[in-house]
Length: 353
Ligand code: ZN
Image 1 (spheres, rainbow, N blue to C red):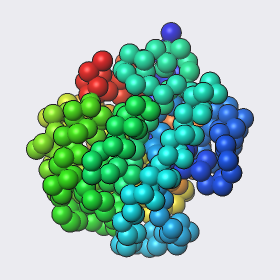
Image 2 (cartoon, helix red, strand yellow; image 1 turned 90 degrees about the vertical axis):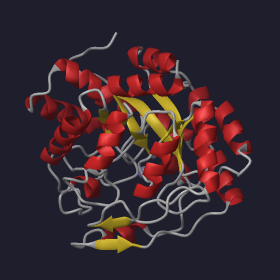
Image 3 (tube, protein in one colour; image 1 turned 180 degrees about the vertical axis):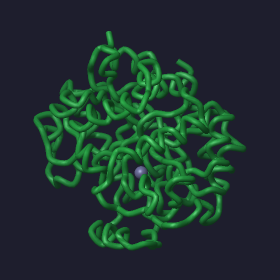
Image 4 (cartoon, rainbow, N blue to C red; image 1 turned 180 degrees about the horizontal axis):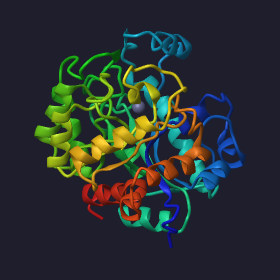
């Protein structure tokens, strides 16, 4: 059973699979199993009490990350989105990352959870749980053949769009300050994708979608509204964060939000700098809990996909954050909800089992 003095953290978003793909080697899974650079691997997850989360299958664009981070050090910025990616090209990358996730399961490093009860058992057993998540639906064809094949391989969560446009929807740019109302909503085929995910009980992630797309999904979906890795726009006014109106809709739908550690989405000034204290995380938690209630907030670290506050550093810094949350006055029951219980709740509601 779970030791409630150090509840495991199950988390809404990591980019481990993209990190492994970037090794440029066949079968890079051993890095995760034996120990790796970056934020997350298996040995350090045990040290930090990290029990897994949503593992994103994501297709990168050929953009210079260093250039992006340099822009995001300015007082305001608006970084042009990369162009759309063709489906065949995206599918090749998505298959490779999905295969890595399956191979990690075959090696006994984690369990790809397909039901909420399987997820609960895996977390309670102290093992690493993974949800197969597709971040941006570029790899999905308009006939949804790839959707069905990925579903059979364990896909249970999908974001119709990462920030660059897809045939389904439009995402928000890396823009500060900005509201998330940055363009058109869902396309006709995008609406079909929402229905297709509802029919298969695949969770929809609204973290990167723009505001019009958000409201289009809200009007159409029969599932709780979920943003796996976003923060409060009222504190950090970046296009990637959720306005209080959006938070009210998420609450209304009984959905949830995973708090993102990416410093550019935490800090009031939107700066991508690691020199950031933990207070700002607590302020976002307080705001999200105030707007959503204690049952609808969790973690969505963005580990291995962003710069995180220096006091966290990597997954081994989670005990420091747990302590800061306790010192801030969060009791045992609330800690259990924030750390893993609320993800279990919303996934049971979304997946139905
Ligand atoms: Zn993301």
